[in-house]
Amino acid sequence: MLGTLVGLGGAPLAQPLYAEDKAFADPFTLGVASGDVTDSSSVLWTRLAPAPLQANGGMPDVYLNQGVTVEWALSLTQDMSQIVRRGGLTTDSDWAHSVHVEVEGLAAGTAYWYQFHAGGYASPVGRTKTLPASNTSIDSVRFVTASCQNYSHGHFVAYRHMVADNPDFVIHLGDYIYDTSFGETFRKHETETAPTTLDEYRRRHALYKTDKDLQHAHAQLPFFVSIDNHDALEDNDPSKAQQRAAAYQAWYEHMPVRGYRAQGDNHFEVKRSISLGNLAQISMLDARQFRDKREICSGEYDADYGFGNYRERCQAVFANERTMLGEGQERWLTKTIRENNKLWNVLASPGPFLPFTYQHNGKDLRYIGGWDAYPSNRERVAQAFAESKTGHPLILSGDVHSFWAVDGARAILPDEQFPLVEFVTSALSANWPPPLAQPVADNLPNNPQVRFYDPVYRGYLLHDINSKVWSTSARAIDDMRDLQSAARTLARFQVRRGEPGFSQENTQR
Ligand SMILES: [Fe+2]
Image 1 (cartoon, rainbow, N blue to C red):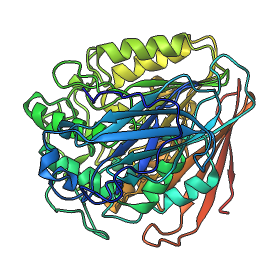
Image 2: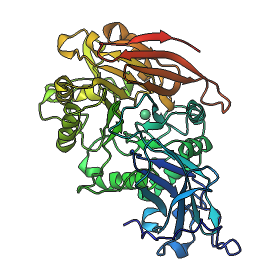
Image 3: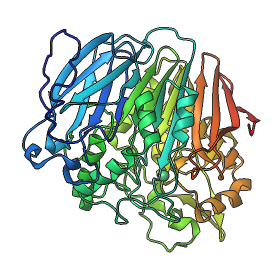
Image 4: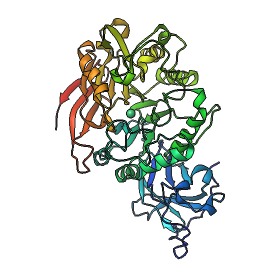
């Protein structure tokens, strides 16, 4: 589907063959990326787009029905002098001349550098790193969870600091693009209209990928990318199947992710399990494609309060069959959690998992974008954690554009107490406007499980884990509108394996 692999023999990668006869301008305007790494493989990505915001990425019309040959090479050194793998493939305009190379048979825990050549041009050199061997004892891993980058709200300066923090990999929990600007606009999207067609989604992704800090992070760090509401659509609405298919195809074309596997009815494989030696297993969720509609209660609500996202729950919300994950993914997740044999048993969820009540006008309101709108499904996942014999449980999430550290055992209502800790990352560059933030601040006294909440700063979470301690730092950007913005560690949280809750250190460094 994605072109033919062409073996190129053992000679060093040739210099560009067509330097005197270039058929198009430099096609590597969107950078390079790697992702979905395992202990023996990595996905390498680029897309040929000489003029990224034009139709077909600015590739001349002659290439509409004709592929372009792309060569790639993988080296043990940054100067590309010790090449260990090479190959070639033909891009396809049906897939926006995107390139996904799945390189197998690599050494565990090893950094490699890679480069593409096409049309007489060389891409920037990217770096990737395989995961530690899945069955070996390892000392430590450092990684990032991040989410929510709205191009129109600020620069992606958080990525500079993320690269400087030198994590092994990045888990991006979704809202990689925004369909709308909402609120104040700092940088303009290529159009104010929300994308609905494949071409429009391609242009939005291409715009984001032109950001130099985003390109820098992708060129330096392997990513695992999930999907949230602004990447595609809120929920599984059959009437919008065509738009969702367009959104997912464009997402695939611009992400360093493994094969695009249609599963019927426009569903695509996003869930993954990340294995980190003997230390941790991270189950990464797709919480958008299979969820039941979030708005199932027809009662009145205050559209100004939380932009209508905080609502009273009717009885239908509690139905047993109501699902966030869909049947197949839930079966996979609960089995993966129960059978975990690593020291840490981790769930990476795009939206917040643990309960939070908004007491408003004498009513108990809940956020309908997260697991509070799917309580029976949450109960079954929590039950799987309870039944798991090995591995300290932990939840990492995003979506709400603010930093949270939550000790689920401290919730007021006994039936909403979960012996789980959740660290919620803030947005990389998306506002957390007062209509959303103020109700959270007002309701902290009703939610003693939330032991840390910061609505002010954008940033990401940096996790350092070893066999005894899980340490999470809230890394904050002073000002996302300033390309020179400094970063600071707002707070650091530590979970000791086998002990409930977490300790907290406010650093403000
Ligand atoms: Fe978001």
